[in-house]
Each structure stands twice: as C-alpha cells, then as structure tokens.
Amino acid sequence: MANISFNAVERVFHQGDKEIVAVGGVTLEVADREFVAIVGPSGCGKTTCLRMAAGLEKPTRGTVSVGGVPVTAPGPDRSVVFQQFALFPWKTVTQNIEFGLRSLNIDAKTRAERVKHYIEFMGLAGYEQGFPHQLSGGMQQRVAIARAYVLDPKVLLMDEPFGALDAQTRVVMQEELVRLARKHPRTVLFITHAVEEAVYLADRVVVMTRRPGLIKEIVDIKSIRERERWDQVERIEDVMDQPSFVGLRSHIWRLLRKQHAGDPQ
Image (cartoon, rainbow, N blue to C red; front, side):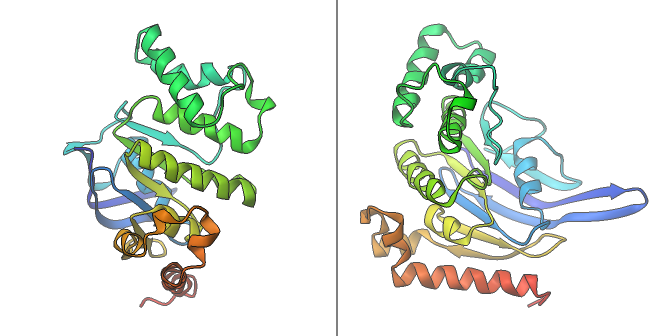
C-alpha cells in the first residue's frame, strides 16, 4: 500500500521573533493509487504539505506517513517533480532519466530497459542524446516526469509541474499525464493554482483556506468522471465543455474566491 496520511499536521516557521503558521492542522488520507490535487490561495501551505510528504521538511506537530511508515527523510518510494525542471544541464536526456537508477545501483541492463520504455512512452525517442538547452519547455518536463517514473516509485509528488509552460504546451502535458497515470498508476499528490487542471486530472480536489492552511472542502471528481464517462472524450477541451465539469470548476472557484475575499465561511 502507498497511501499518504496527514494526521493533525502543523508546520510553523520562525522569522526572528515572529511565528508564522503555514499549515494549521491538516488531516488528509490519499488512498493507494489515488490522484489528489490541492488548490488554495498563495501561501496557504500547499507546497509545504508536499514537501513534508517528500521528507524535505518536517512537521512541527502531527505526522505524515506513507504506507503506514512515518516520513522522516526523502526516500526512493517517493519521486518529486517540481515546476522548474531541475534537469542536469550537462547531462543528456538518457543520462538525466537514468540518474536516479544509478544512485540506487540498478544494474546496467535493467537501467537501459526502464529508460528505453519511458523515453518511448513519453515521446522522447530521437532525443536520447540531446541536452536540456536543446529541448523545449514541454520536452524538458517530459524528461523530468520520465526521470520520476523510471524509479518505479510508490508515490509521485508534483509541485505545479506545468506552471512554467505556455498554455498550449500545458494542455498537451495534462493529456500526457492522464495517459501516463492510466498506464502506470501511482499515488499522486499534485499541487496547482489552476482549477481546470485540478478538475481534469484529479480523483479528488482538496481546497485549502488562507494561512494558516486548513482544509476547507474536499471535492469528489472521480464519481462524476466515471458517471459522465470523461475518459471516453479524447481532448481536454471537450471535457471542459461538459456541464458537470463546468459545475465542478465553478464550485471550486467560488470556494477560492471566498478565501481571497477573506470570507471565513
């Protein structure tokens, strides 16, 4: 099992004598192989929650667990994809993707097989010896996602992975991620500012309040997607035209607008 559990998690930062409560007490269960997106106002603690799940930060209070094991540090069971592609500029596409496998001392034959699979699956064939500066933003993010998946992690943590892309490339990458998630399902925690992206990708959308970040509401997307058969619609724009999608998007926007307006309700 690769569920992610936040149990009464708080995260407090200190700036001099000032105490800043970034996350004010979050309890959340992300089920095994579930795709959960978190949205909320800037500074509400979305990324802090992801970083605690990654083991890059520690809760001030409460616990974060993966598969029932408390998270105390980064580990190979969790891969992180950031907004900035974080590729090694001096390494080729192949070298970037296989980097983590080398760190885990995976044998050369297995490395080559895994890298080849994800290069082909992510549409990177022909670019194996290319360097990051020779690739478009979308291609660089494909490399970053392939590098995360090639480790065969139980959990994928994605922090606004498409935020730096132009609108058209972003749509293409969203469709690619849906295709990848269906072929190679993982437990995914996905941070985004884009409501449409959250509704399109996620099984559930967690809406957080302003700082100190709390969960305002959890919106079920999966049951509506299955009922409306969104997976039979080929293009994202056709999904977005459906009344059920429009209704979910509008509901989440209203929740966020109240937070921006300072409405405690």
